[in-house]
Amino acid sequence: MKALFLIAACALVGATATANASPYVVTVEQVGSDVVATGSGQIDLTGLVLNASDDPGYPGIFASWGDIGLGSGYTDTYTPSELSGPTGFGTGDHNNASSSTGSLVAFQDSGGGYINVPAGYISDTLLSTSTDTFDDATFASLGLTPGTYVWTWGPDPDQSFTIDVEATPLPAALPLFATGLGGLGLLGWRRRRKAQAVA
Image (cartoon, rainbow, N blue to C red; front, side, top):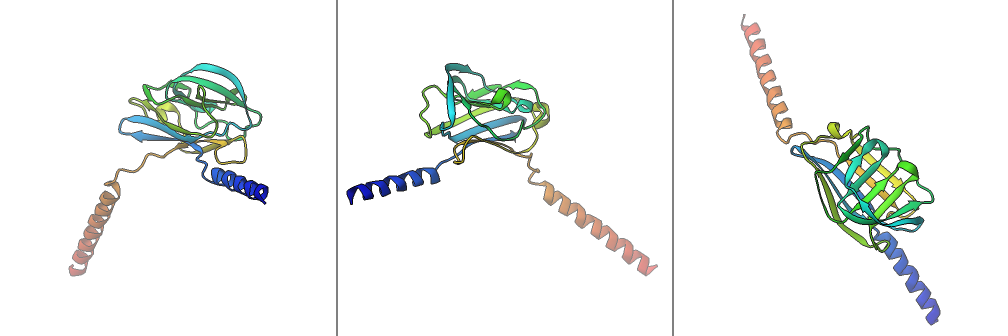
């Protein structure tokens, strides 16, 4: 009976861990005159093979190759036995980040795929937030195409790497401005119609 209870408890804990898994997501946004990439989440190393340890990582974006590196520091490099996803997230060449924060996490779709995590990273633990800032840049100058790009190497949510290039939002006052123009146009039309009726 105890053995059955222990098996059920382990299964429940495993199911809870999978359900609470937080996939690693990088959000890329236009912030004023800069482009900022922010990443956080968990990475499940199941299905990945350790390729090299203590690699120096370099922050930057290479959109046409599907490569991005956030933060700075030494990493462990893993290769997936199988990787599915898009071939890139834009047309841009390599662009180095102007500044970075946090430990380096990187994804490279080129060359069969590589995933870099901080040296000594323990599978499926929450990674602290890492950022890259590209000064005086736009999506166009970095060759980024807005959209959501997902690569996977297994069935679980944290066996994936997502890059979300967010479309530049409209200025908050633009809809109000458009409404005002529409109102002025309607007012002018009514005046012209009234003048024609009087004549």
